[in-house]
Image (cartoon, rainbow, N blue to C red; front, side, top):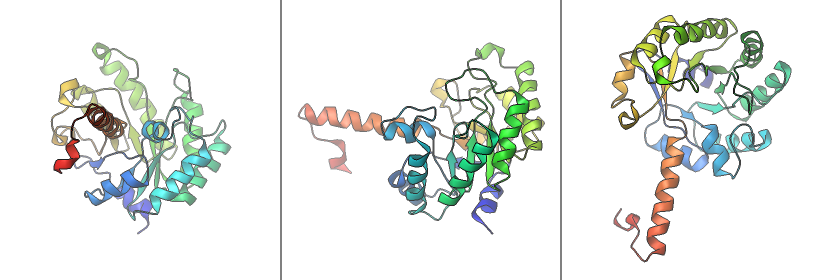
Length: 258
C-alpha cells in the first residue's frame, strides 16, 4: 500500500484522524514519536517559523525544501498545506503539486481563496484547480471558506447549502476530503458531514473559545479528520517567549525540572 492510499484510508467518518500540525523536521519528529498516524504541516506556522508571512509569502522552493527535510525524519504519510496551490492557473497548480509529491507529500490542502483575497474563488474556477491537483494522484483536502468572516449567528442552513454545493463540486473534481474551518456550530458540522460526499475535516477549537472539550464530540457529528492548524506552533512560541522572559528576569527556566 502506498503512502497516499494509507493516508486516504485514515479518513473515517466517526473515527477521525487526529493531526497535530507541525512546521519543520524537528517538530515532525516530535509529533511522530508521540504516536501520530500521519504528519501535516500548517502554512501559517511553516511560514512564520522562517520569518515569512502566510498567504504564499514563503516561496515554493523553500516549502519543498522544508517538506524534503520533514520526509527525511519520518515514514508516516505527510500532508502539506499548499495554501491556494502556488499557481495562477490550473496548469501551474499541477506543476506545484507534482513537485510536492516528488518531495514526499501524500496529500495536500488546497484553499478556495487566492492569496490576499477575501472573496471565494468561483466554483467553476476552483474545481478546475482541484482537478489539476487531483490528477497527480495525491490526496486533495479541499478547503471551503464559506464560513470565513461570517458572524456565528448566521451559521445555519443557508451557509450549509453553500458548503454542500462546493463539496459536491469538489468531490466531482477529484478531491478526497473537505476542510471546513471557521465554525464550531454542532448542527452545521453534523449537516455538512451528512451532505458531503467526501470525508469532512474540522479544525480544533478549544471549549474556552466556544469549541470542543474532546475529539469524541466531533466524532459523534461524523467528522473524519481533526486538524490543529497554527495552534501547536503558536503554543510553542508562547512557551519559548515566556521562558526567555523568565530567564532574562533572573528566574530558573521551567525545563530545569523536566
